[in-house]
Length: 187
Image (cartoon, rainbow, N blue to C red; front, side, top):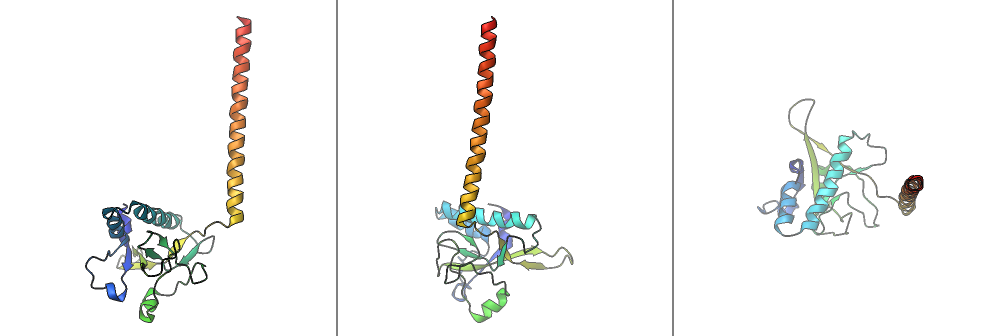
């Protein structure tokens, strides 16, 4: 579990604020999943959170092939990411989380499994590098999933690359065999 997960805070719902067992960050959440034997959930936390860190490491412009909004963690499946709206579309409303707290807008549903109740908002934080004081809140950012057509093209490209690799290996093996046969004939 990456210690950076501790910089992503979990916002408790009003009835969870005084719950001492409520994980306060994604590091705590991953530990909880592992202690409860929910290894797949912990792996999903790792996969989705590592993807977020990878995107931020590449200094995204916030416009090119990304979705930005308020992230959520799902306690049912371990998914961390943007929630889906009632139509199954990802919500990318990046309005201030404090405003959502005030308006009692509940997080979710989960972008992976659709869970509605067992979901909490996430707040991505980092130390403010400019003023060296305090913490800056960042939005959740993720790459959108591939469309069916894009998945098909990606699969076809991978198959074509594999076919070319196999053809090259066969050609090389045939050439080596021909050389060996020629050497045997000379002997």
